[in-house]
Image (cartoon, helix red, strand yellow):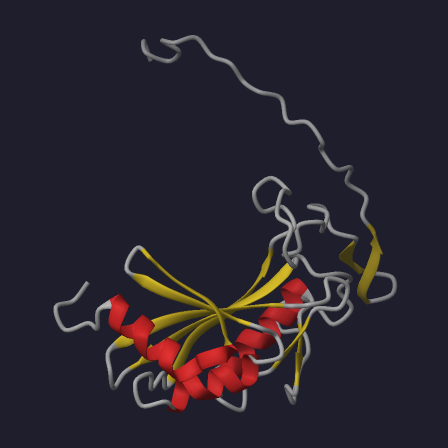
Length: 202
């Protein structure tokens, strides 16, 4: 940590004072502060973190989705989908991680923070594309990495490795066509066991 960086405990105190009852949880680990807020308070909490005097998190440097369905070998009992944001205050030289869990696993929805930080635009589109998380209030929420006709969300833990469809160029039709996947999924990868000195004489 830089000698000019704000101590994590000082960031924690400032965030607790600013968020008040909007704060669900706050932790310090490895010198970093992580905050959890509820889905209902998410947008208001993010605006507070940007504007409050002790916070001044004027930059959103990253936002991503997470799928907790296989977390701890499936022993996770919380909500499945989470949005994680990383904030930076240039003025105060401090960083913060913010987590918000989506209340509905079947239709994960959180408010868009695109109006708070313009940088959220493509980050939220990516999380929508890869995880299926809907950002309410986003003015252009559409896929950004996969094709328009893509089926499913490829970063979800239950998405098949082979996908649902494959595409190829059809010379007769002179266009790209989508077809069912023809490769068979491999369930078992053989384990290779070699002798202790394998390749030593080469």
